[in-house]
Length: 81
Length: 81
Length: 137
Length: 137
Image (cartoon, rainbow over all chains, first blue to last red; front, side, top):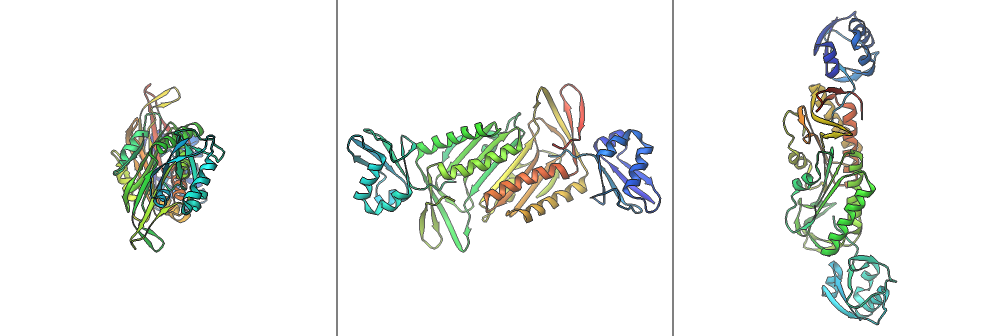
């Protein structure tokens, strides 16, 4: 399956992209996506460990199973206000 | 001595005056003034018991000794805001 | 800005008074006349004050708040005279580098003002009755 | 009123949005960019957000606040893009019949917004350096 990953703030800067299409095995989880990203972009690893992820604009845990064309947000620690 | 008594809100309405000159013995206290007022205006007695008094715009206790031409405020329970 | 006014309170001016380049948090509290208290309908309020003492006490409150909380500035404007339903009778502004201190100070200021500052309101009900409010809230 | 805007926040509109004839207490919190943080001088902030999710989360916060505190209305406006020193980046309004609930809800809203809403700020120092702020306050 393919998921659409949205990147923000430092994640966007480090990756040099605000959006990525990521190919994953069927039944892959957020945890699998994080592992894939850390392997492919080692410079993102520290930030991945500090960040949370969202599916369909909702915060999720690593166990969350993804689906084809899911919108996944890579959410570095927020600093609004 | 004579003190200038300022009355507000319900005290003013019950007494029918916003200011009174009150003659008191030398060394009279706020407690003496309250007694004098309650005797002279029995309809004020309940309100006197619930109120506080001020001398020179400062809250004082019954023991406070007055002086000639002191400005005394008769302060019913406040309700600003 | 510590004032007693007889016409509409300029709430934007109260807020502006406590905003600064070092106060990242500005808080504005506005108290106004409720139309309904349970079944009873208020037509308007009439406020009166012991002017000289009320100003003195409001200045003291501002100084106490600045010494007890980590805040930089306080503004208090109370309206007296007739205040119609929905109109503001009190506005309090607090400026601080720390938002929690701003909230604590704002809450303390309105609570303490209601207990200590010699201002009184007369409630005028739509029924035609009216009474001085002499109970602390 | 739950909005993300790209120009100056109309704080008077945020306050007006939460004032009503049944809400005797209206609270407005305004957060703005501090010029100095210790010795460091900020030139400006740049905010970005995950727009759709940020709006969704802000609406959820407003509903949670209305169910957890005795308040009637909530308004939240966050500014994104470039925000100069002294300008407001966030305004939160709360309307309630009960002033204590208004203070508690306002404090909870800004605290929780800073933790949960996907918005980020980049601090640009006068030294020319800049960095994304990724630590919760």
